[in-house]
Amino acid sequence: MAVWIDPDKCNACMVCVRVCPYGAVEIVADCARQTERCTMCGVCIESCKQQAILSDAEKRSIPDLSGHRGVWVFAEQQNGRLNRVGLELLGRARTLADDLGQEVSAVLAGDRIRHLASDLITGGADVVFVIEDPRLDRYQTSSYAKVFSDLIREHAPAVILLGATHAGRDLAPRLSRRLRLGLTADCTGLEIDHEDPNRNLLQTRPAFGGDIMATIVTAGVRPQMATVRPGVMEPRPADLTRKGQVRVVRPELDSNDFRITLLDVVRETGRTADLSSAKIVVAGGRGVGGEDGFRLLENLAQVLNAELGGSRVAVEEGWISPDRQIGQTGQTIRPELYIACGISGAVQHRAGILNSRYIVAINKDPGAPIFAVADYGLVGDLGEIVPSLTERIGRLT
Image 1 (cartoon, one colour):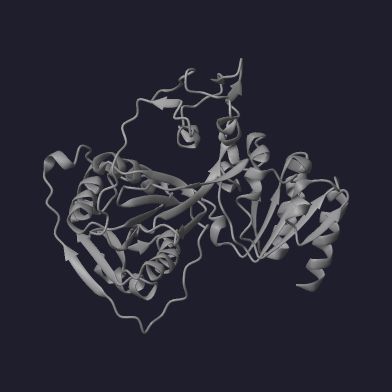
Image 2 (cartoon, rainbow, N blue to C red; image 1 turned 30 degrees about the vertical axis):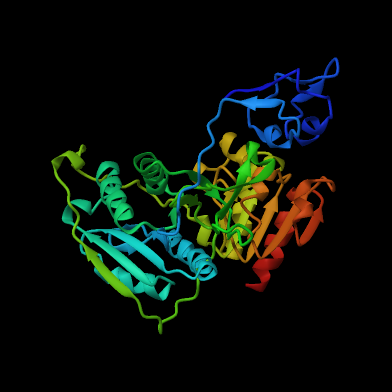
């Protein structure tokens, strides 16, 4: 799309200068002029009462969206066990669907997985679509994209939610391309816009490196699709009295839908950290100073029966493994207690810890941003504070 200004119509009223979100319009010689900062977003076009700002974009009419109903959740499973993020998404989907007066559906794919439907119903689903086929036992891009897109075309949901896991981040853009849908990734907030007659989904996520929070709307397109990182949402308590419907789907698949032959699965040795479900997390940042400092944190984590995490700087320095990174580019956590040691508290890190019930910050800089979100703060040398805490807690346990 191109945007330009007709100098014969412009009267230098300054309205476009004030409304431009990028500061990309200026007045030169009694006429508005775009600067190199202009992104062609078109915000200024509607504001110009002189109709001096023109565009080659064609206006698109909003189609009838009333045929799309229901909030869907992609419920991942591995080896016959549900991934927790599916239950987290069901909790939020239940709230969204209640706002819309519609049903929640969970979509489950795999082989011999029908028994998992009951957990999804008690977690908030009204309907569970069980796509069973031995060839779907392991996630594969082409086959899962085929069966999911077929089901979406048949039932026309209004909203689709997927976990921002390896599978979800692979599947969501494929569905977006096949079905020509918008997609908002790594959302931290999902609400229904009650002021809009179409009841659009307000999808909030960090933008510009986490410096701001952007709310995105895919108006005029259905279904609306978003991914949410594990740990961001809270699952609902299981309601054992809930009743739901299980619909078994036999997918139509052929050899073209399986472009990869899975020969074997090699499991990574050792335990991969799952901080999203930890009750207590102790984490370190640049202020820890190195591996010796992290050994102090390990001792504290041990007496607290806690998981150990770190900031991006700690991971980049090699002081802690990448699977233990906390923040916008790592894991999102919601522990009962989070102890941040030597972490300044950049926006990107704070985005991953705000769901913690209690935050304790230890930092020698009293002006560190982490104290703005901490419930309790200790200003001082963590090399003295952490061993003292470890000793005292150890005497109590």
